[in-house]
Amino acid sequence: MPFIQYLNKQIPYDIERGNRKKTVALHVTADCVTLKVPKRLSDEAISKFMTRKARWIHDRQAVIRHDPLNRIGKHYVTGETFPYLGNTCRLLVVREAHLEAPVCELRQDCLRVQVPSDLTGEQGGSAVKEAMIDWYQGQAVKKITERLPALAQKLGVQPKTVAVKNQKSQWGSCSRSGAIRFNWKIIMAPVAILDYIIVHELCHLIHSNHQPQFWEKVESVIPDCKARKSWLREHSILINALT
Image (spheres, rainbow, N blue to C red):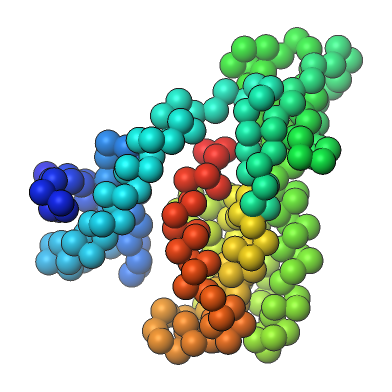
């Protein structure tokens, strides 16, 4: 198994080759690093990429190992906390005898989820989780729909379509045809980060790659985009709370 060296420590990683066109995807857990790459990407290119990412991988694994959220996961019971627009919300689970389907709503800083009283244990936890995801997805659609038009106007662009999806490894994507997709989990981040992600994808309607011209365009709307990008990288664990 290949490995990278950082601070006198060897960090092994797995390589998965697939039908990806150009991009690579890096998945990091407390004990495992997996790199998904295009079939024809050379070993030398992979080694250089992983060397550049060594510090980030080391720091991310350290955060995961010291974060209870990632060690024990969520059980979707009263008292647990979840992020929403950068704020911490406490979960309150209420069981109702005659309720047909779970319902989630936000009351001040409390996520109140009502579930049928006959759903308990793992079944009850799954019902709470599904209700929360439905609510988060709905809020993501509302907030993105609210904020995207003004940002698009600043850039002088108009996406062909906009959709909110469950994307595993991306916060957003933009196709060559002008279709933009956003990961619904970005609704957990502060509005400033949400705006950065929206602008990032809108700028891909002008520049398809990440060359300097692309970042200049992003900075024209989000002057502190580097700081927001860093925040997203450092806090990605928290805004993946429902995975």
